[in-house]
Amino acid sequence: MIVTAGEALVDLVDDDGELRAVAGGGPFNTAIALGRLDVPVGFLGTISRDQHGQMLARQLVAAGADTSLVRWSDAPTPRAVVCRQHDGKNEYSFLLDGTALADLSPDELPELPERAWALHVGTLALAVDPPASAYEVLVHREAERRQVIFDPNVRPAIFGDVTVYRPRFERLAALADLVKLSQDDAEWIYPGLPVDEVIDLILAFGPRVVAVTLGAHGAVAGSEDARVRVAGIPVTVADTVGAGDSFGAALIAALVDEGAFGPDASLAADTEVLTRAVSYAVAASAITCSRTGAAPPSGA
Image 1 (cartoon, rainbow, N blue to C red):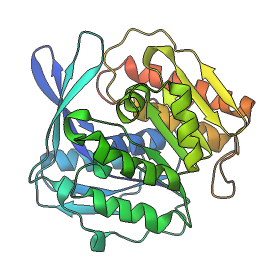
Image 2 (image 1 turned 135 degrees about the vertical axis):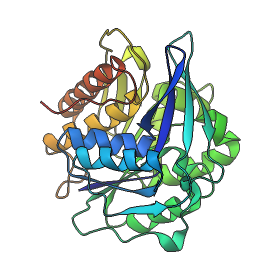
Image 3 (image 1 turned 45 degrees about the vertical axis):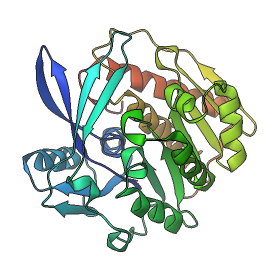
C-alpha cells in the first residue's frame, strides 16, 4: 500500500459564473487517482466532520482508499478558489485559517501499517505551518524503512518566500526516491534554470527518478542512466485541475506495473521502462484535462 499524506480540501471552481465545490488537495487527489488505477492506497491527513469533509471521505471510500489513518477534526474544511486564466493555467487563492488543515501536530502522527511500502507527500501540507513541520517529521521518520514520493505542487500565493521554502524542498528531495514536479514548480523553486538542469540538480540530492510535467508539451523524466521526453496529447481542455496529480499517480502505477517500483523493488527505471511509464502518465493527465475538476481516469 502507498500512503498519501497531506491535505484534503474543496476546490471552488467557476462553473458558468457559479462556484461549484469539488474535492481537491494534491495528496487527496493522488489517493483518489491511485485507487482508480487499482494501486492499493491509504490516505493520512485531517478531514473535517463538516459536510464537505463527509463528501471527501465518501470519495476516498468510493476509490477504494484505506481511511484508517484519517484524523477527524471539528474545524471546517479548507477551501481553494480556482480561477482559470486566459493561458489555460489555474490561479489559486486559499481559505486556510482555522481549518482542519492545521489540526495536526507531530505527536498526533499515526504509525503506518506494515503493508505500507511507500509514502507520498507534498503540496500545502509541506509548505504551510502548521501542519508542515508535522508532515516533515513523518517523512524523516519513515524514509529509512519506506520509499518516499515527493510532489511539491507549488502554490505561490500561499508558499511565501521561495528562499525559505527551497531548503525544505531540498531536505525532502534528499529523502525521496521519486520527485515529481511541474515546469511552473521548477521555475518558482529555481528561477532561470532550464528544466534539464533542474532535473540534474535534484537527482544530485539523491532521488532515483525526477519527472517534470510540461503542460501541453508533455513531460521529461530522468534518472542516473536515462533521460526521456514524451510529447503531450492534444485534447479539448475543460480545465487542468488535478492534471498533475493524475500524472503523478499514473507514473507510480506504471512503474509498479513494470516491476520497477514496489515493496520488493527499489525504484529503478531504464530508458524503455521510463518512456512507457511517462507515456502512460501523460495520457492519464490528458484525460483529466478533458474533464471538469480533479477527475482522474480509471485503470484499463
